[in-house]
Image (cartoon, rainbow, N blue to C red; front, side, top):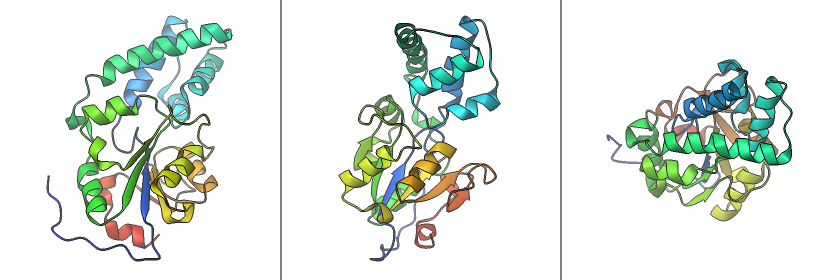
Length: 227
């Protein structure tokens, strides 16, 4: 891993904390989610597209299930929904348990290293309830001062709860934080929290972000000072 030998110190008036979504920003687990949801849909007798799958990014497991069932016009009881969500999650966990550090997206380790060595505080802000497994298997856990995920919050993005909790744990006001997100719901959550945001992905989709890049490998510490 090649990292710079010197870093810019944080100005008093700039961003001081960085909150990262997990899926699609640090690692690409969207494909695993898609495979598991598709398997569930197929078992129920219908299918859905990758384009529809984009709507599942950044929202909770149960909200995702409701969308999937809606696409298939399938009605299930609360008990059945819980069983289906657990079934899908079991398939997903089987896949992420085989993840390795090679599945970390390009530039992630270099950028996180640069941020921490420059004095920024980092938190994870993810809807995933499996973030601990993913961070452990990809060797990213040590970068984060705080981890806020679906096990700690009850409201899904675009509700700002996950990011506001992260800011609180880090000890900074929302206006001192920047969010890194690949989902429209996540960018909206950052805006609702009163935070700036950097979108990872398509600029035509993430229109409410303050800046959009294709990946963390396209960012430098200095970019945060220009937000």
